[in-house]
Structures are given as C-alpha cells and as structure tokens.
Image 1 (cartoon, rainbow, N blue to C red):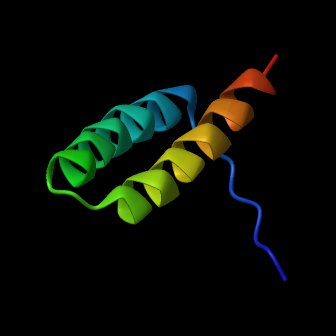
Image 2 (cartoon, rainbow, N blue to C red):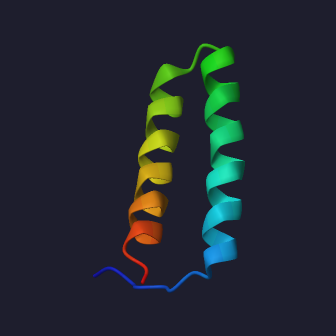
Length: 53
C-alpha cells in the first residue's frame, strides 16, 4: 500500500535543492550508487511538480 501525500510547491522545490546538494556530495565522495538513488528521488519530485496545474 502506498500513501499519497500532497506536497506544497515550495516543499517540492526545497526538497529538490536539498537532494541535489546531497547527490553532488555523494558523487564527490565516490558513492555513485547513493547519488543515483538520490537522483531517482529528485526525478520523482520533478515529475510531481510537472503534474501540477
């Protein structure tokens, strides 16, 4: 079962910024798998943002 939670536009943008910084750090630290997982989460947020009217 998946729970649907509606995020505000500001929350989504903040999450994308924060996760982008974490993905950059993971790449710099040599953790490509972690960076890839974070990028997938970022894409999910971007998709949610794009689905908004």
